[in-house]
Amino acid sequence: EPEVTQTPSHQVTQMGQEVILRCVPISNHLYFYWYRQILGQKVEFLVSFYNNEISEKSEIFDDQFSVERPDGSNFTLKIRSTKLEDSAMYFCASSGRGNTEAFFGQGTRLTVV
Amino acid sequence: KQEVTQIPAALSVPEGENLVLNCSFTDSAIYNLQWFRQDPGKGLTSLLLIQSSQREQTSGRLNASLDKSSGRSTLYIAASQPGDSATYLCAANAGGTSYGKLTFGQGTILTVHP
Image (cartoon, rainbow over all chains, first blue to last red; front, side, top):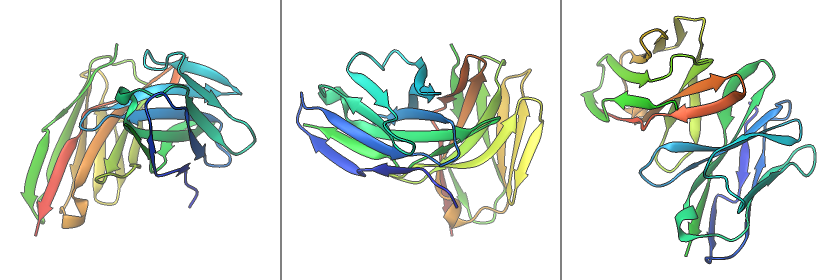
């Protein structure tokens, strides 16, 4: 069964460093998303991406964040200069045309120290 | 701004019981509503998607209903099993210019004991 895959599963980084979280969405999907979940809190929307551009972004998604679809298969989230409060589980999701059922990856646990 | 609330926050039941998880949302202009399961430290598994024009969806022992006008959805789990123990999340999809953007509730932690 097709699935969304994310790498790495866990990343530890020092405050101020750049990190890139990687995702491979389901192959025929057109809409891509990043969400995050701080420990013990709700899952929060970060950004949606369609047709090679950002469709919508939340207040959380400031200038420190960027997304990219560098080729036909990968979708990345970059955090330019990490802060302690960026520590969270980051989920990638994708959905297809005409069917917004979202399929989520297993997440990348980012720990900023 | 859409707000999604889930009740109860936690539920502990003996195996075999039928149970209902509740989800409410403040903005009834949703495109659809999705129920997920989350195991500890893991990703989100889609369980059911209900379109705004539908009243309910069924998958195996799971049945989800949607009442847009009252801003409510329920997830019914029949004959619960210990393997059903997980956190259950509902998420409302705004649609329109926010196509695909999901607003999540805080989840119901379900424990089914043998």
